[in-house]
Image 1 (cartoon, rainbow, N blue to C red):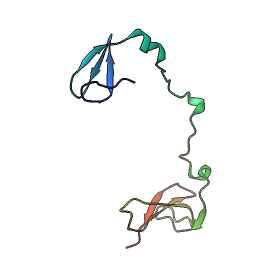
Image 2 (image 1 turned 30 degrees about the horizontal axis):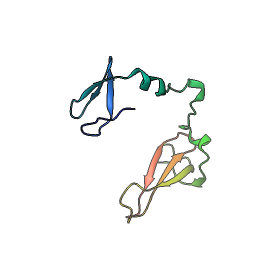
Image 3 (image 1 turned 180 degrees about the horizontal axis):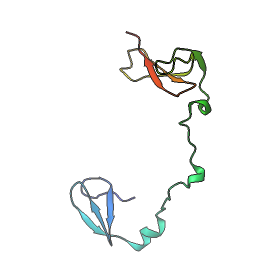
Image 4 (image 1 turned 120 degrees about the horizontal axis):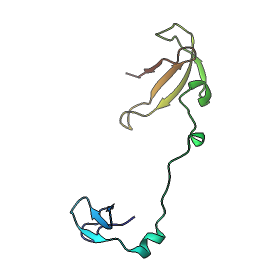
Length: 106
């Protein structure tokens, strides 16, 4: 990673140069610096864990009526989605159809 000497922003590589996207400052890339750089690769598909299935997420179950399929069991979790001085929002995920709904304290 290279930072601009003029404005301090992170620079991008373009061919044999570093270019600042903020102020346009350019400088040649140094081969000695290139040897110190680490390039990362994307994760392989076998390394990615799919946590979209509610059943596999380890969430607790409760009795709640699904508005879609009328099932009476749902996974639940709480999340702070508004200001910190307001209460958390409870989210439910149906154990049958995986419909997601929320319950707010008003």
